Length: 97
Image (cartoon, rainbow, N blue to C red):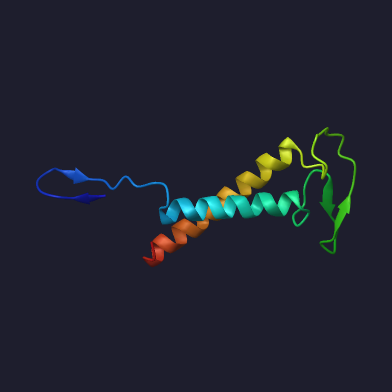
């Protein structure tokens, strides 16, 4: 947003392809990928003391062959958004975007 003239405010409205959008899409996608393919803990794979992933039965039903549940999707999507917001705010603070 920038102010032009007296009281007039111009706002740039490009969303698709903007740096903020690309960051949010990539961080959320990477987190969902990590959860789906077993690189992050999930409802059916808990982490042990040595940060090894161990399979367990959570009692949640899913149609996914890897056992990725709705709770896993929501949790990984939320964490991906949290990481993305941190990256966006950090880059805006540095003046990179």
